[in-house]
Each structure stands twice: as structure tokens, then as C-alpha cells.
Image (cartoon, rainbow, N blue to C red; front, side, top):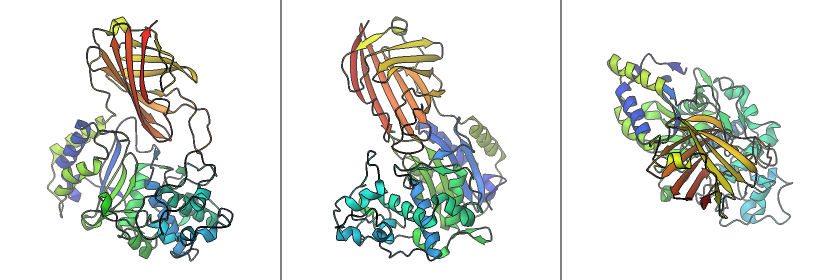
Length: 482
């Protein structure tokens, strides 16, 4: 189970199709971190964009919701829950004295289907108890009626599982499911402010872990000869339970999306995917960070166009040349630097020069850029004090992003650490220097900055793509050299 195929062709996937897929990913500058193709329970191809690797844990964002659904299914199979249970009955300490009837009537099934009584997620980053908000914010419509994507539904389901299990939901799933499939023993989950696992967004695991969970679902809850998930629940969870076509989708099951070609998927913000096509016995999984990317979540489209049409029903003839080229391509995969030039006529004149900035949304009072061959330094002063960011020029440089007022393993708790990051920069014309930062830590995100020089003056534009951090780096600024 989950063995390595001798070649992609041996499981009916042409190596040249995988090459075309990878070439298009890089050509369209899609920030992929890893991909995994599984056919007939065998790994046909796998690769990672350095510095990501097979054993590095990655934030799965809303893919985590599908994991929580399976935990709920296990509890239903054990007789500890039913789909028709009213969730409020499990939280007497969270509900108000006058609970709204629509919230009182909300069932486990309603929350699994994303058909809650709320039209948006009930909590914010500043709320100290996210489960409490679900029962205390005014609803907008009856539950079980219409699809409305609501991460608070998963937060409540996670808290329910953990109350009944008396432990984190991943720990509860280990003996019967996660351990038998070889899920990473050190996988974990970011916590909510009240200390519950953030099952709506916080699972940290490897790409192989994700693929194994999805593969068990594609096989009807089986792993080899062992039934590791309840078959009836998996069938229902991966089937269409509610319509969401108005949003351009193909239906929704129990915290699992329906796909075209009779497929289903786990999906997470930033292009975390496990897309399953049972009829083709094919699983595509990937990790990435496409937040704010011009192409958006383009990866499924590229997969559908470059891989899916070429799946053969029988093994293909060996293509040794294409297979060797594919192996070499995978070996070279790396996060791409920002495109542009390594120098510009104005570079020498602005190198190491301090600029004082007028009042701006970022609160930056002064800054300078310094260049040292294929490396550079951005120094600036903001409300936190003096900060230094190192970046590559024409290459990606790993380091730390200097801001220290961000969340860590628990939302609401600021540990005072700096996030790991990758940074690259380039001159894009005679006066404009662009900088791109990818945050590659527990929390993923991106920052893009454009510095434009005009005589003694500088103009700056910053735009961030991240959930609940980098807020200090969004907007325009201008200033003059000191």
C-alpha cells in the first residue's frame, strides 16, 4: 500500500505529461511547494520546490476540515455521536439563556454540510472563545437549508470531538486510523484562543500524510486489507450532500468538496489540495502558497489540462528518456526568485542611502536599501523599532522576517518570534526595485514591495497576502533622502 511505482508509465501516466505540468507551473510562476501523484495505490511521481522537502511539515489550512470530518465519522461509528444530534446540547457552558431556535436546531449534519444558520464565520482573531461566538452571534437563516462556507462550523465540530474524546482530535484518530496508515507521529495542529485544536485551518503535517488520508477515503476507508475508516460514513462524506453550484462548485459532502469527473477533494487556502478521482484510481495532492497570486488557485486547472487527459487505463510503454528528464527536473525544483535585472543605473546612487518617509499606513519612518553582489539588505524603522531583512538578488535567500508581534502555535498568543521566510528582489526597470517575501513558517503568507526612485525622492507600494499578519505592510508611502 502506497508503494513507489517503477515509473509513471507503469501506472498509466506518461512522464512527458508530468514534465509539461511542472514546466507550466514554473512558467506561470505558481508558488508550489510540493506535488504527489498516486495511481493504483502507487506513487507515480513526487517532488518538492527547495527548500521544501518530503519530511517538512506544512500548514494544511482548510484541508484540516476534512480530517475533522473523518474524526466525526469515527465517533459516529463508535455510537458516541449521531448526524442528527443537536450540537448545542454538547455545549451547555457556551450557549446563552435564550438560545436562538435556529442555533438550537443546528445538527452535526448541518455543520458537516456547511449549512449552518450563519452567513459568515462567527469569530474574529480577537475573540477569546471561538466556540462561544457560534452560539451567541445572531443567525441569518435556518440551518440545513443552504450552503454557506463557515469555518466556525468546523471549530465547533472539533471542540465536540475533543470534549467526547478527552484529547486533541489527531490523538483520538491515531490508534484506529492515523497510525495504521503511517501518518507522521509528530504532526500537530495550531490551537484556537480557548485551547482547542483549530481543526478548521491548523493541521501541520507532510504532503505524504495528506495523500495517505485522501487515499484511504478514495479506497472506501480501507488501507490495504484493513478497514481504517467506517465505509458508510466515507461514502456519504465524499458524496454530494448539498448544492453549491451558485459559487461555481460541484457540490459538497461532509467537509469534503465534490469535483468534476465524479471526483472529490480536500481543499485549503493557498492551494493545499488532495483531489481524488476514484473512477481513474488517481490522486493528485499538492502543497503551495498562492495567496494573492494573479492566477489565484490555478493548480487544479493545470492538473486537469496537463495530467488528467493523459491517464491511461493500462500501463504504457517505458519512455526512458522522458523518465530521466523528469527525474532531473524534479531534482532541480526550487522556489523561483523574482524576475528582473540584477542592476540598474540608479542603483549606485541609492545604495546605502537613508530616506525619511512621510506619515504612512505602515508606520515606517525611515529606510534604506544596500546592495552586495547577489544579496541585499532592507533596513527600516517602524513602531517595533529598527528592523533588518536580508534578500537575494536574482536568487532566493532564506532568513527571518523581522516583525515579532505575530501569533505562534496558538491564536491569541504572541510568542515574540520571527517567522522563517524566503526573500528575493530585482530591478524591473531603470528606477524600480521590487522585493518579494514568502513567509514559510507555521503561518504562510507573502509580501510584495515596490521601491521607485525619482531624483531625491522615493515612492513605495506594499501589498500583503496573509491571514492575520503582515497587516503593518499594506499601502503607499513616500519620502526624501536624508
